[in-house]
Length: 146
Image (cartoon, rainbow, N blue to C red; front, side):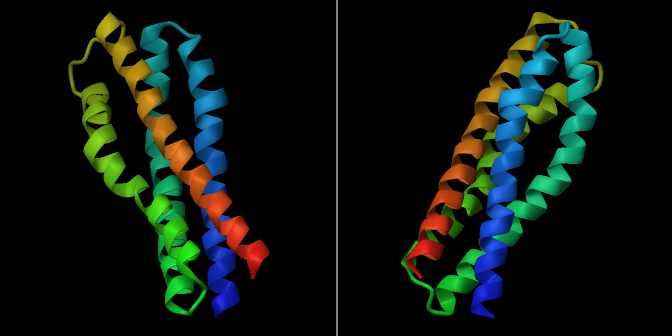
């Protein structure tokens, strides 16, 4: 049970981090190379698809990391779980208002305000990338130590 939880926490946290970093370093910069209207139009379906995958990975990594800690794996597992777990409230509190603004009916997708929101979204999403990366590093360190 312990090894399964360690594997799930580490794998899901690392997959989350990899996907988040890919979005920040590859997908979003490519999107922003387009005109604002096209970038915003591409962002919406990409965001909706990524949400399901990333939310599932973050929650599963968090739950598994907490399980490892509860099974005696050490406080580091709780630290890693907390880092990846912070992604969820951060998303709701900090990113969702920007997402809702970008998805608002009647938004002028070609406007400078839309471009500013897309730029803001990238910085907010980078926080998620960092949290995922830090959680993954903590998990790997804990695996090496065990």
